Length: 149
Picture 1 (tube, helix red, strand yellow):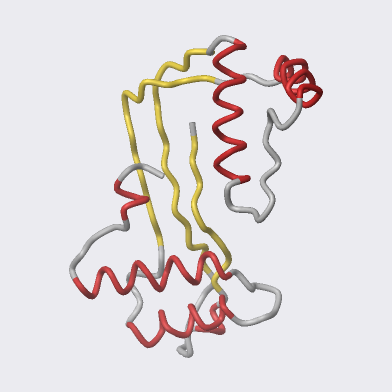
Picture 2 (cartoon, helix red, strand yellow):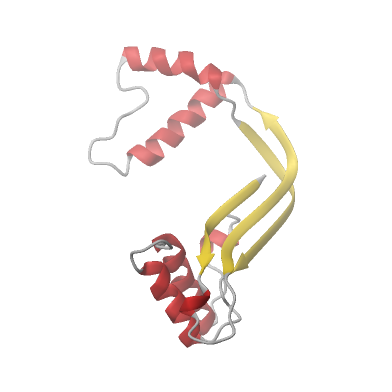
């Protein structure tokens, strides 16, 4: 299984030095293991948990079981989905976040990603800002990376 985090194109124009070439910043984790398909009942339960997780972030959550009709519909369509669990045997995570660049260059990259335009990428800019701040403070990877997400 591959889990991707923020990623995006990094323009050499942001470096402010020459020569320079473009690159791609990314966070990714590769998980190897044996997936186990869960029962339809467990699939419905997990779907319910997932829906609640996302809907809890809204002002008016739309619950999977908001009505008898919706529950019936959810039970019917869950057959078209597959949920699984996986015991992870091997986990490999990588990140490339312009960590080899001086702070001034990385700051310009973050500014470029934050600016409106063809390479506007606020999630990547936020992640780079967090990583660089944590690295400067000697704190290591954010909790999300430590847990494998």
